[in-house]
Length: 334
Image 1 (cartoon, rainbow, N blue to C red):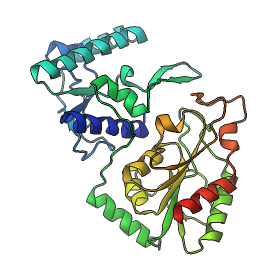
Image 2 (image 1 turned 135 degrees about the vertical axis):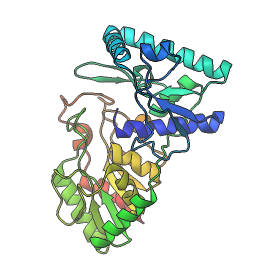
Image 3 (image 1 turned 45 degrees about the vertical axis):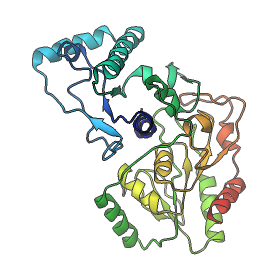
Image 4 (image 1 turned 180 degrees about the vertical axis):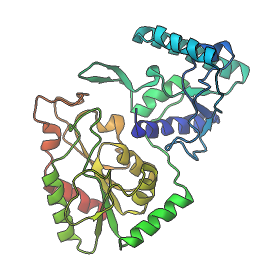
């Protein structure tokens, strides 16, 4: 689970806070020495400085407690023992049941172990495919374990004053006007390869069309610094951290991108967005249809969950034409 996954988790913590009045504690699954010592979380890890959870009032944190060498060796042996998926899930179920019981009956904090496979919105994964759970959006699939619901997905993110100031200065240094669109033509290919990507020549054609329709509108390209830069944009690829990108997107009139981390950031910032959606998941599961203008063709093979391969020439993305994206952009800007 990457940064986008943690942003989905913020909707779960928000639901717990709103519906139960409880600030849940983000943590990882305890190992054997943690439980034997009376801790229902992994003492050696904390999300206090996590780039997604930072400054979020819905989320509490644990302190890191160093372990001795013997504890470390016992934990390594235990980790190996429960490495088979079935045993890992049994351990997770045991920890979850005890944690919730202690919370309900003994007034203990609600520890939410975000690394648990049982809490994933994926039902199973093979070497070639991910199978998604059913029963609502991804955040609701997670939240129902804790007795809360997420009917309308949302996520929360809190840029710092220093991050906002840096972006203000960065935009000024590149002479970007207050009227600008943020665009990310690339996609993270670590898990799903190029299945969520739109062809780069179509991104370029889209930029040309936007410039023709809105000659006074700046277009800022975001993303990592080793990807192709479009002609006619202000290139800020590699110039911002993921957190700083939130501040930039919040200042834009519109974000244009694909399913991924910056899409979740745009939702957290309340920025109008046009999202090009393929078929790995469906928008109702992992997107924000109540917030974003989503272009999805709902091909018959979706949601596929394929890990980087496709037998149908990526028809979910390749069937999206420049013209329909231009019309979506016009409807949002007008």
